[in-house]
Image 1 (cartoon, rainbow, N blue to C red):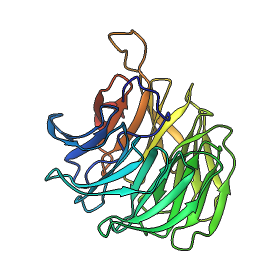
Image 2 (cartoon, rainbow, N blue to C red):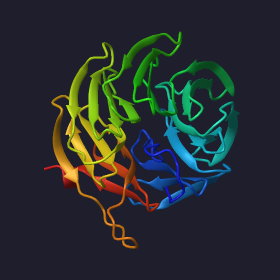
Image 3 (cartoon, rainbow, N blue to C red):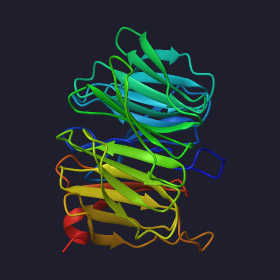
Image 4 (cartoon, rainbow, N blue to C red):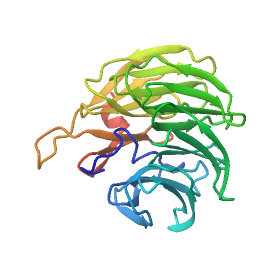
Length: 300
């Protein structure tokens, strides 16, 4: 999260630990940092990548962390111990997104090489390749049941696949700009996407039907995250984070832009994450800071 150019909207904060106590962030300084969510203190720094860390994901059991980097690799860590388990190689361009399955046994990665790869992270084994999109893959998400893969791309589409067979179930073509971020609700029924076209769209994951198109952002939507199944947070280049009711598709609150002291401009929101119970939102900004917001303090 610094000035070096990178795929906009690729999340440097992609997950909060299942117990809600810690958050991981990746940065253009080539490191992954683990923070105490409640106090904001730095717990540890993971060093090993040779280029920007573009995406991070914590496994649902809280044991593993995966990081995708501009060095074209994925590293898998036991993050509480700070131990590097393995380095997964195979992408030929920046790894822009990583996401664990609900049981932690599969890891999906997407890249600027247009490929999506599915790995067994503990066995260090590539399970399959998908030629997923006509342009760079920006974001991937696996349903909690582990059977559906959603991906967003610079080709302006969201694709939904059977993760085990690779069968394309739906191609969602309603966005008019790059799809920067996708997220799936905890019950596996709903997909949320954010795009450079400034909209957040909410879909039925099973049917591919568009349920809501939300257009209150003034610039590109770089990140979307789903909390406890009722709340969506979206971050944008307009400097704001908007909180939405997932079912009703309406805005609940806007966290206004944070002015960067050195430049005086409102910082771009590069990434967002929601604590599992929906009580806190983390956001990463283009000045290299991570900010934690208490939902109770902003939603009235």
